[in-house]
Image 1: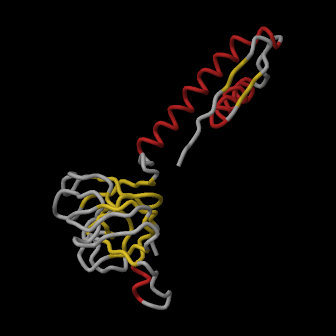
Image 2: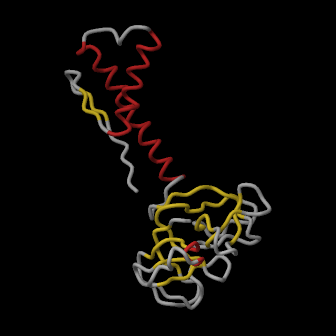
Image 3: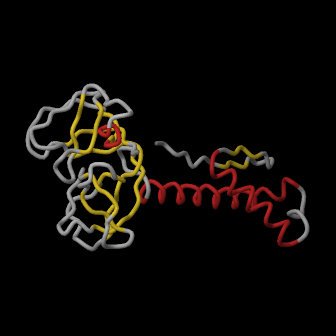
Length: 206
């Protein structure tokens, strides 16, 4: 997912060119002056240019700050939406592991074992048990396949019998079949079988 911060440019005659999140922040700066003081910014338009240019600079910087935060904290470079949950697997986190809500710790995850209650895919490897770890809950993620399992782009992806792992199928199970509720998403690439193989997938959870 791409999020644009936008920009604000104030010309020498006071003409404003605005876009994106920066436009809303700029308008808020200018609008709040009137809210706080009871009158619009005083002075002739051409005399207000330096003030408005200052607001434009602040708006653009703040917009980029917001977007940087969102990208750094919420979205991965692969375009996955993440949340922070506590690692309750009893071991260091492993990227791509399929997880479910912990039954023992609040705001935590454990490796999926029921095959029907997956909530996300671990993003960070090496996070200690008991520490916060990013989990992809929507969008694109690299998912850990069951050892010996290959994948073909377009394959259906579901929770495997092995805890924390996924398996693929060329044909999605019928909705009326229990296997359908094990769905994790669909493969976006083809990979050969092996040990601890990751496949990139568009994930969604039942």
